[in-house]
Amino acid sequence: MKALLTCQICLCGFILCASSLVQAADGELTLIHMGDIHGHLVPRPNMRESDPDAWRMVGGLAYVYDQIKKIRQQHKNTLLINTGDSIQGSAEALYSSGEIIVDILNEFKIDAFAPGNWDFVYGTARFIELFSGQQAQANWHGLAANLYYATLYEFPATPYADKAGTRVLPPYKIMHVDGIKIGIIGLTADRGPQAISSRVMDGFYLTPGEDELRDAIPLLREQEQVDLIILISERGLAGNLELVETFPGIDIVLSSDMHEETHQILQAKSGTLLVEEGQDGTMLGELNLVIKDKKIARYTWTAHRINTANNQADEKIAEKIAQHRTRYLKGDAFHPHVNPISGAVLRTPIDTIIGYTRIPLHRSNFSDAANMPAVIEGSSHDFLSDAFKVVCDADVGMMRGFRYGTHIAPGPIKLEDLYHFIPIGPQIACGLMSGDDLRWLIERGAQGSLTQWVGAWGGGWLIAFSGITYALDPANEFGLRASNIRINGERMDAEKMYSVAGYWYRDDPGKINRAPALEIRVIKDRVQGIVDATAVVASYLRRLPTHTVSPQLNRVRLRHPLPAPIGKNKEIQPLKGVLRPDY
Image (cartoon, rainbow, N blue to C red; front, side):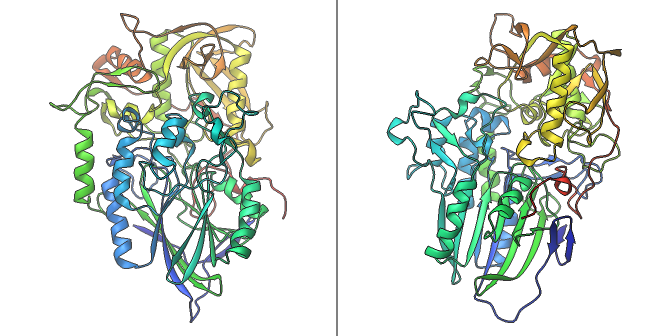
């Protein structure tokens, strides 16, 4: 199924449009856009309510490449752009520190790449190995104008003192296609993968990108005399919108970070076109352009749904994926692997069935879903927070919010499914927090997800809780959104200490789920060895009758609906409600 844009509509500061046809053109160009692959190698079921692909098998890199080949066969002048978050999100990505994903995507012939925050997950030294310099393992042509080596003022212990203050990747590149001179600017997210550790970014320094964009636009337009400027950015649709309306001159933004699907292209008041491609390789963008007199004279936008009905697996990519996966699946090639983040050891093949579910497990509903829009709650997170609560015998279980993730259909749960939910190597700890602490966790999570101020968005969704129910008013002010908070059915006491369970990391030993806690006890195995969160969830499943879950849902009651979707783009970020200057 394809979504083709041919309309001209103005909506709340955006214009959803297609330009009128013209006779002549200076050149033609097709942009192929992928982003937020998140380590997904093979197709997975789609359990998203009201999605046209619901209950189909979607994604898979061999199927993504099939669609790329089709576009390249139809259009001779193409550029393939990858906008980040590629090397995290699966067991294979984790235990190879991204190497498997790099090896496979090297076959795609990517023309430009903007790294995402999760591409820094294995540390700065590994990032340099994969993406920086002529010896980079990835042949993706990385760009990031706002990524620098830290100076001694910012990070006195920097391991890169000889490069202090210089860029890690080039800020832009210039390409010539069919007579069109194209300037491509790269921006990475202005935050590292903070859910793991602030130390992941040791030796690097990130800026928001405003100053770099302000300088790059006139440089490319006036000095380099480019015909087209493309911003490839992992700052999310709303963040990128704010940038291009502040600094006009960008023609196109290929965006990632918030995992939104633009089935209808967005056009800012500045004239910039913006698109984003969802998550897990389930969508691939095709933007066909006709350029005349240094302007976009005509374009068409196609959002390709990647599924096993529309696409066939490319044989070469499928074979390479299968070869890599043998080390992690049942069979003679399987062997233990050490988690590069926590040090835990994987001793069980990831295709092992560890339990069952009676309901779909995911956090992917659209913003207008009648029950549990994904920004608020998801069955997968309810299930995982239940597991942490039970294993710790705690009052409250907590699971960090994140966007979408894999889907598990009713039936078997495999270990690899858990690694798509928990691919970052946390351990699980039990400790104590006050009722007031828990209330502010709820409020801060709501602020980072629902505020109208783009700069305050945290990139995740509300924390999921087991044992806590509450009402939420998304339109209220910070500190006043949550009400009727109950813990295991009783009204929460702000001064009472409650036992809690959630993520724990060695470099931040005084916190659970990145929040201060008391009397922390980390879950260990029988010989005091490291146990990561996936093993904790597997242990929980073994305790259940018939090893089957059916979590209680609707733990958060919305007092008012979320902002309405924009056109055909039914994603969650409340773009229509964003407060920004009237430029």
